[in-house]
Image 1: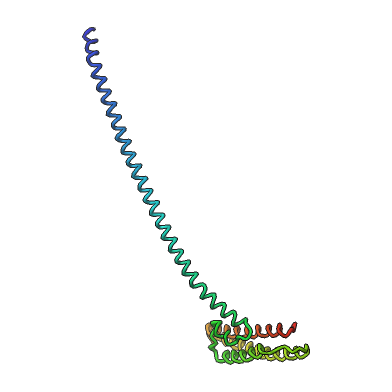
Image 2 (image 1 turned 45 degrees about the horizontal axis):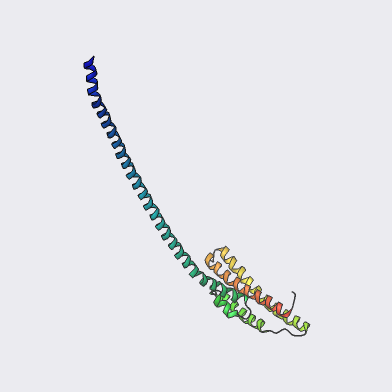
Length: 207
């Protein structure tokens, strides 16, 4: 019995030392694992920061491209507006028959349309230069004279337009050619209409 007790007393410190060593080893392992986890976390955070930085740079580059595109559009826009303004002023402004043809961007290429355009230029210029008479009856007579001449030219244009439409429907005139002629004729008629409306206002005629 004493031998067993003595053996137990001798082996107890050894066992305790073994347990302590094992505990220290476990703690060291945990510390090592913890350190490895910390390193992985730090590495992930670093990669995330790099991705954020790259995304921010891409956004800045995209923003610059958009800004350049916007600048390009705004640079071209005034030119288009200027062209439209010139066309509008040409077709709407009184006393601008020749300027209207040049500023509208519409080229009168059809021979008959060119004749109509020249006659319209002369008639519009004459109407723009006309001064209203102080006598109302005289103003009405002058206005009616212009109205008849404007209407006569407008009817000629309409008849030619109808003729070209029949040629297109009959297959003797291509769509592009018909469309081009129609655009030219419509432009001339628009100028005639505006000139007549301007004359009506100047002469104080409510027609």
